[in-house]
Length: 246
Image (cartoon, rainbow, N blue to C red; front, side):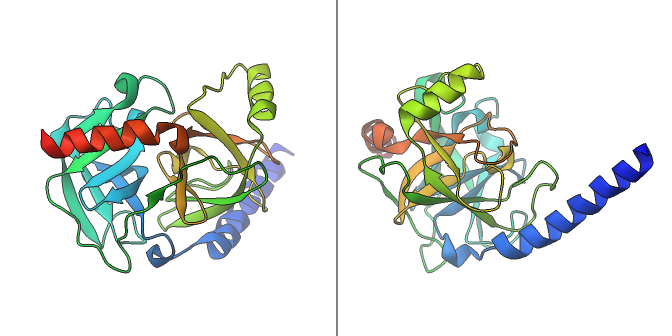
């Protein structure tokens, strides 16, 4: 009986992996702001292009890495090849990068060549109202039964009511900070899982959030947590200006 159950689970996982990849795979041209943050030339987290020489990601992705081994790949739907690969020169982290949604700003050693597949994304000035459609993209594990993807994926989401999400997360022992927000799946995928960490949450082609570090695979419409970019935009812009000077 256990063998039958295992084989059924394995078969289901394979079917999910094939069908979800077919439905959710996208080209980099659809999300040209997408970046792959790499440690020792291996994909580690997602990120978003803020300007030709600035990438935004989650601080926990780079907090324990020496800057000499951090690089960024852009302009490719594949996380391991293609596009432009540029070394990181400086890292600045929000509040020492100790919390799961703290943001890191990466200054590149040389500017990116912008084009149809490499573009900066504008920061959202305000948090979209609950129910607003959004997407998150990355090389991710979109489901607990599906392994991390080698190709670029996206998941459709909806922005969640902050108070409702806070109440739900508190019951599970997770406190939602003012500089965090919640979004939940609007399609067939259970949750944006940990493989999307650092990936851009986008609504109306503006950056709304970055996937928090400690999201885990769940089921149904369980919301996941993101850095709240509208709240953090002032800090981001000031820190970028200082990075460009010093």
